[in-house]
Length: 113
Length: 112
Image 1 (tube, one colour):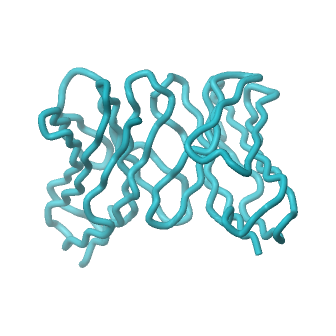
Image 2: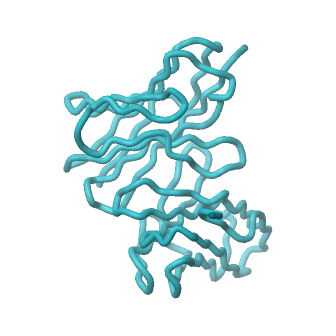
């Protein structure tokens, strides 16, 4: 079965600094990859997704991620952090048309003034 | 559109009690899911449904049952609650298989 590992349960950056959240996946078939964001006491919202095609994917709120098959990675980046980016971020993988989506443990992002 | 809604938002149960969580979606999605979220473990799939009248087991199905009698509703039941089922439960739905999932706001369940 597919799986996801998110490196770092907590990441802290200063406002205006680069945000880098790491995600590595395992899948025996070409994966579909997702990043979701969860604000306090809310459900998850999709930030971006990769299914096929261009490996650099742009999402909402200035986030982007790059699918690197050779590294089995799908890291999330944002050039300049805002206070409003403070949240928990989840990477998820679905094995092609398999309905079973697996989530990582999550990374809590803190943005310092 | 309300999207995905969940009822109730909070619940406290005693060990051995039963309850049903209700999920409703108004997006005409075929696929619906129930997850539980525990600290440090992300979301784990309990059960899912690929259409009205069908259900399937996910990663952690033990102790839970589900039903999908209507396309827009997906019910999660706990027949005999245990403290290990204390968690936040999320319902989600999607239009496509392995596509973007839309999440409800969650139900926080405490089992004493």
